[in-house]
Length: 268
Ligand SMILES: C[S@@+](CC[C@H](N)C(=O)[O-])C[C@H]1O[C@@H](n2cnc3c(N)ncnc32)[C@H](O)[C@@H]1O
Image 1 (cartoon, rainbow, N blue to C red):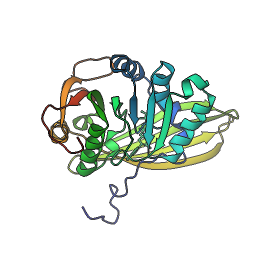
Image 2: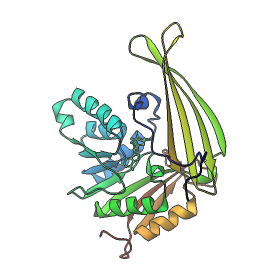
Image 3: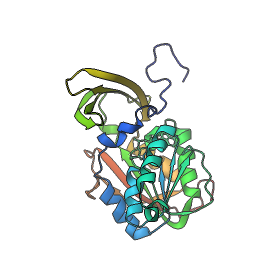
Image 4: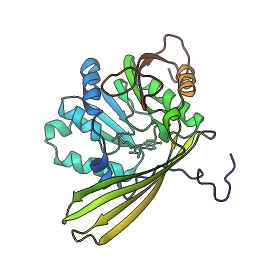
């Protein structure tokens, strides 16, 4: 679609530069035990695609798994590197950090488990989604497992505001986050605007950082077609990280997948 003036859904690049240091503070870690459980089934090596600050990857490495993190954001990877430097050598040597795009990566290794926590929606177009899935398939061992964790497109509001409570940071300061989400079901896109406000203990504002980010709205039927086209079969369809069954009201759709028996998709 051509870019129109005032079109809030144009230029929806992922917005992590300049705010990566705050990412882990606001993250929901309830997915980590889930990924650990599947890692115990598959073993290493594991690819954490769009792995960001290594939030999930470091938990896996601490549990003994070898993990490669691929992410496109230099800022997120800088945070990951700082975390890596603080780990013991034993754990750190199990983690590899790579800057790259999930749509086009080429790592000379096949993985027993590939995960993509909170991130597949950053492939905004159907072409990028297919490219990502095909790249994943070509890096997955024949009997490997791929876990695709999705926010359900059908469940997203057209417009929503959110506000997170202040969190203490260094220098006796706090950071708080205010956001606005706007979705367009026809264009299958979501725009997220987040304002980070850093305050001193007396409440005065030190800095305000605004970012805009975009994600695809991923509807069930579209995802199922993409997966079929890309050569994946669904093993399990879950509605949350406690392995609850998926239903039409689930906010999350978590799929465990294997390479399909048929020779569909490229990059086999
Ligand atoms: C919501 S964060 C999730 C980070 C991490 N997976 C987690 O759950 O903590 C999304 C991540 O996707 C990365 N990302 C966005 N588009 C990407 C792309 N095309 N290729 C690789 N990484 C991408 C961002 O840099 C960011 O680190």
